[in-house]
Image (cartoon, rainbow, N blue to C red; front, side):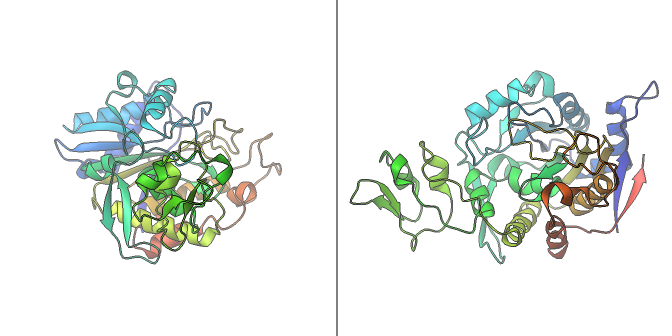
Length: 366
């Protein structure tokens, strides 16, 4: 049974939020995950511009200061997105981060986009799984010695629930890796938007793309390996993301990615989940709907499965806020399913099957 440490958001003359976070860090003896001179990835989500539900920079600064106090070299990071938005390349992503307050001055450390300028800076590692024989991991995440994963707990339109596990799988991989997680189908070109620029042809690792008789790019479905590189590089967006997929394979692929990523540095991961502004949708939207439950507190653990299970249980036990997307106004026991449908627990179960963590936990309140 894993231990999950908890503190609420009440503060006063006895200590502010930063002091509470330091006590959580000390209670879990998390310093053992970080060695002197470590390059420490403080993995967070900068929030799409227009969304204000993300964990704010002054809070991230606390984790940076903790790492600095241990003699480590922290940096604040996230990876580029697959979809078109304000974070799909490092230039726009950094601009977005700065507009949301994440700069070296406020964060206290360099802000680095983990997979480079256009999302093609990654390491490929072997993996023996049901869906994957190899995984792509953003280079800055892979090359870091240790990591502090700071997650904003929320609902999610595909997963149902977003916490540490989703932050690892989606936030630590390049866009082409995200494409393979999201879709079991191979991409196709929308001819009406193709300008025959040739970017996809030059980038395709399987030589599966060529011009057809109409001078439009066309993907050979037999040669295509489903890597998603063409989706990432197409400047016209005519090789779109294939979002339609069943929840089962999505969760299975996600669990495999979580396993592969965490295995790159065993025992060097620490997880903090913030149960505040619990919005019904992902922070990747340029908006955030009203929170569904009151601010609950902060959880910390070295077990990402246990911390997500404890987070979900606390959200589900809370009384929904008036005016939120949950209209019942009373305890349902499963608030997450009310906003996103059932099946959200499957990822937790699969991750436990992979030996990533446990669904059984005990909460130690700090």
